[in-house]
Image (tube, rainbow, N blue to C red; front, side, top):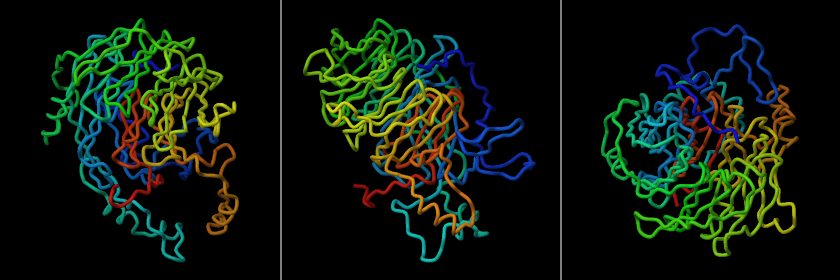
Amino acid sequence: MVRSVKSAKKLKRKKKVSSIGDGSSSSIPSMPAKVWQPGVDKLEEGEELECDPSTYNSLHAFHIGWPCLSFDIVRDTLGLVRTEFPQTMYFVAGTQAEKTSWNSIGIFKMSNITGKRRDLVPSEPAAGNSDMESDSSDSDEDDEDEELGGSGSPSLQLRKVAHEGCVNRIRAMAQNPHICASWADNGYVQVWDFSSHLNALAESETQGAQGALSVFNQAPLVKFKHKDEGYAIDWNPIDPGRLLSGDCTNCIYLWEPTSNEAWNVDTKPFIGHTASVEDLQWSPTEPHVFASCSVDGTIAIWDARLGKSAAASFKAHNADVNVISWNRLASCMLASGSDDGTFSIRDLRLLKEGDSVVAHFEYHKHPITSIEWSPHEASTLAVSSSDNQLTIWDLSLEKDDEEEAEFRAKTKEQVNAPEDLPPQLLFVHQGQKDLKEIHWHSQIPGMIVSTAADGFNILMPSNIQTTLPTNGA
């Protein structure tokens, strides 16, 4: 349950995330560079990690002033499947300011996000040409530069709406993305209409100043007071406007829309957990079914039609269950992350048999702060942890001794995968401090955005291959 960054001081504009720079080096390394294995190698005194930008198709960092514990990517009308750079994205994020009255919700647009051009379906290498041969070409760097989509730096345009209290969590409705819900540390859940701000950003082509903008005073459409603050909130992906909010006193409330701008909150909560409700997720296929996780170490499955008690409840971890994610491409799969650093994958069809865990990972050694399935690949998910690592996993992968032997024979090197690293681990991103939340972009395959105490990262690992139909269907 490690979440708060409320004591963080305001970030200085000149501060950069050390490991995600532009690839340039300010000094000649005293020792040859080598690949660092997270969880295996240890940094010696005086050693520093340097990012290899060639491992990313796209990588950018930015901040909007105060740290943001939570954010959400706003669905836009720029295309359902976008693969060409430069890209444009819209976000909402809530601040964790030093003083309560300084907090705001930022509605912002990031444009001219550059990156490498790529194919939807990776082309097969020519016969007889190994990866090592193609990588050794002297002209690779020139070719890579020519394949970059866009030029110059990304442009950030920002509008701020005053928010009473720090924002614990914020979520935009998928069906009506201008409608957002925020959880405040004063116990209020509020629903907002940000259509005017999003429209203004969409119409503007000029770069806005970072943070030096006026703050709009806007009333929420509706606000509801819980008995205590909370973090759990989720919009229903099937029924537009249906909302859940859960608090630290173990209560979960259901919001039913009565119009496009009004909601009725059932004042009788769902109660089943014995401690704080940490996260909520609606089922991707059943409009009345949702899951919750708690500090009590359990996950519960609920059906709103069957009353205020859980339909099923089970012990999920030996510590607080901080986050859950329901797979929208394989609706039987539910992922959960714990305070002890472990995360698990469950097949909900096996609940009645007792043991529904189909995968369990102990790679991270610090609390899991966010977990989310890819919206484009059913077996892929991203995880962030308090160990300052963002990891990407493909559960369909298995260790292949024959393939490793063949690769060693080609390269004439010993490249055994460390036993400490699971074969399902695809990518490790570092350089951010106190990682809090991550989201895949549902309209840009392979793109991930993360927030931490020192700002945001936009990244697209080069080894995450998303195969999609060329017509975008």
